[in-house]
Image (cartoon, rainbow over all chains, first blue to last red; front, side):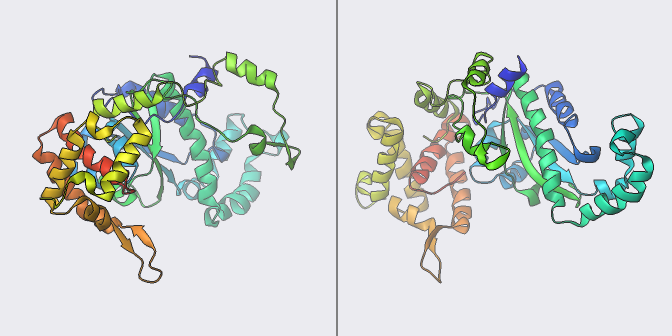
Length: 260
Length: 112
């Protein structure tokens, strides 16, 4: 699938084939994609625990579920519980930016030297960052980007995915989560039981209400020729609701024994 | 046993209205199992449909504001599971549970 089509076909899948297992190699590909995501100072805060639904004890599984997420978690054969490891920077002491210097990703042309990391980056940026209330927010931003690469890989591999919340206290005990890990979300994975279009591309607010050019009061003007090109390349797809979506939903509910 | 026909309860009318709005048609004529299952569950927990919905809500002492009670939901969930398991296993048993969940969700109560 072309990159643009992968973005276009990605939408939250909430009906999985509950009896079709996901191949372990596909799970690994998703994790590999997450690992290659962009991350400030190459900190790599993202942690993920892969759990196979059918290996959970019924008692633990019942406690992990939250409202709305419960049905999705029941249908998804694979759960990836995502966390951010707040201990990374403190343990690292600037070693990762130095590694980036050593491999030529960061260069003196931009001010990067080992001495600069020792004298400024670690004591005046990174160490204070770990004390800042903004630290978890910054970490979560990067982890979201990394995790999204994994989501796109899932669609590339013919899977569907849906982020949900989960009972973090139960997960902490059940999966041995360290105290330094901050819970993010759970990525539910499986083969879609619904059509890949899943009723069509979801509505979004108008482009010009979201993006700006030069000043936050000046909308970024959308070029319709670009929109048309992206339509041709299957990134912009038929909007929801597609015809017969209601019928599809009802058939899914009946086939899977779900509420109507 | 219910004191009057199940269709006469307000919460059942709300369920019918919600199903019709979502799917069209006459939901109970098309699938009589829906009402039969709800009636069986009402017998099982010894509450009529309106009382079942009312059980799921409480009012804040300070303001009198009505809210969906997590505590009540937690009380109800094991009973629903027991009801489901009494119907066996697999999709048919799940459907038995799902009719009750559908009734509750169309009345604004989320059980999962």
